[in-house]
Amino acid sequence: MKKSIITTAAFPFIPAEINIAHMASTYIPADVYNRFMNLFGNDAFLVCATDVHGVWVKRELKKSDTDIKSLVDSFHNKYLKIFESLNIKFSNYGRTDSKLLYDLVNDSLVTLKENGFINKKVSKIYYCNQCLEYLPKRFRIESSGTTQTGKLKLDDSDDKNMVCGFCMSHDVEEVETEHWFMDIPKGVDLIKNEVDKQNDSRVKKYLQSVINNGLSEWDFTRDDYYGIRLPFGTKNQYVYLWYDSLVGYLSLVPTGQAMDKVAYRHFLGKNIIYYHGIVWPLILKKGFNFDSIDFQISARGFLNLSATDKELIDVEEAVCNYEPDYLRFYVAHRTPDSFNDFVFTINELKETVNNILCRQVGGFFNRCRSILRNNNVLSVPENGVRNEIFEETLSRINTYISDMEINKALLEVIGYIKKCGNVINKQCIYKNPSQEQLELLCKMMAGGLLLIAPFIPGIVENYNIFDGFKLDNIKNIEFLQGKKITYTDSTWRQIND
Image 1: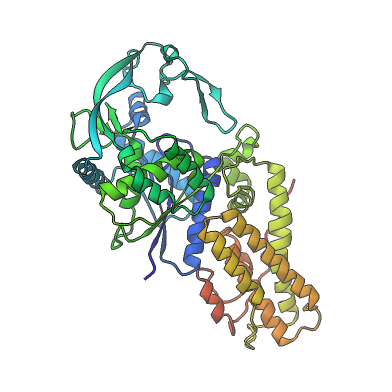
Image 2 (image 1 turned 90 degrees about the vertical axis):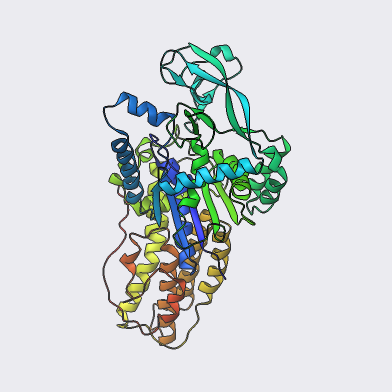
């Protein structure tokens, strides 16, 4: 029996600004993967949620006149709008303030404690006497600016240089208090076992190096925080948002699906591999007592924001200037299936869309349509002709998608289009074609539509001339013969200078 596939995308947390970098590393690859999984006939679901917890939410409430519901609703709806603008289609998009998630977090923490994986210890925390906030590390270390990919450069060589990231005060005090820690080193053997199952060699190598360097206990407790209250400890202690974010994936599993009987496929940036590869399996095994886990991680590098054209960074601005599916195609074509960082430019966007999507891919569909129309083909011929190029390409794409390699899958689709164009030229299908050749032409065109659909779901129908031919399941091509053809003149327009 096939497992259902739960494709996860890392949760955006309030008040994060989602930009094209997040789309490239996480959301577009996850969406394309999930669409392919469904195309291949799997029971697949893409899930995500707005992370509504954390110190920033508390700060936002302090400086605004709004209530928590209005604040969270505002960001939640904003994120949904951004995702929808790029045709990201979630099966379930929730929030981390759901009752189900609260219950799952509490139950798992109690179980972890009972299994001996949670202990109370003295922890050093830091408090700003100026703005009266407890400070996570990134909000208490002197920063020397940002990296090219927008990450803070932290200088923690001297604790005396500590500064509050909220009010910039140097009046930061070290305080000792009792916190709850997850004993990650105690679970090293089970973590190693799950790491060894990772298909992505880069992810596996990174996680193995983390383990070899020695695992540390994890202080997941926060004081005077906005989040889920700890089921044990003092009344003002809360769960760090990363814990409930990981458990949050389980809360989004469709009703009726057993959480331990599905396959999880995580898409994320390279900076959060640790939580998914080290902490996640320990929570599942010892917090939920899962007998086995089926999960894979796919991580990508960062977009170099300093070298990327500003017009492309803000999603709302980008979709105002360019067709959303053009952006999806470009992002998938430009973002490598690796940890390497990358750059987006308007000139490269135009070149990719104009030369590859419009001229090569769109040109192929337009050529097929013209040949069929010129030969007055009103329905797909029925002679049982095989499209061997499609069968061979589909096998390779299936492998790439199974390995969560989105860029390689797109390059394979483009290669399919080129091979089909060569067949047209070699067989001179444009000159007095036979019924067998016209059938092959229909099948090559239909195959291309199916394979490109996950990348450009909004505009792919412009070239779908086959009545009732749905692009949601690869097996639909088996029923292409005999379908009526309705001709249109829709095209993909190139981006003008």
